[in-house]
Each structure stands twice: as C-alpha cells, then as structure tokens.
Length: 73
Image (cartoon, rainbow, N blue to C red):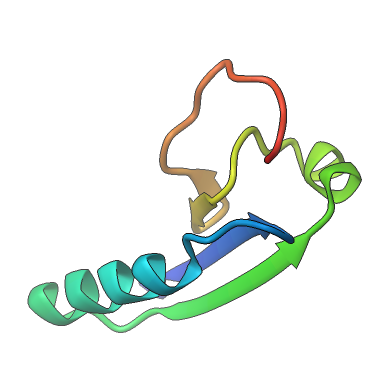
C-alpha cells in the first residue's frame, strides 16, 4: 500500500518546519515510506478543498483531524 501525505498551510502559517520534522520522525520510527507534499494556499483555495485549518494534513486523501471548525488561518 502506498501512502501519500498532503499538507496544506495558509501563506502565513508558521508550522511548516515543525510539521516536516514530526512527519519525518514518525515515518522514520515506523519504518514507513511515503510521498509527502507541502502546499501554501490561500483561504479561497482552502475553501474549495474543504479544508478547515492550517495546517491541514491528509493521508491518502483523508483529513487526519476532521472537525467542524470554520475558517482557514
């Protein structure tokens, strides 16, 4: 099974570096290989994708933390 991780962040989100470190550490500890992508997007793009927060992390297209939170910041 191949794993794809897509990370979406607002243009001003300061979480990219810690998120990269956490994902790399988790994959390394579990011995898992994955395609990992990082995207900087606008609030309109986030709405179009149905994202609710920044960062939003999807694994194989599924949000890892679905919530009923409005807005993308």
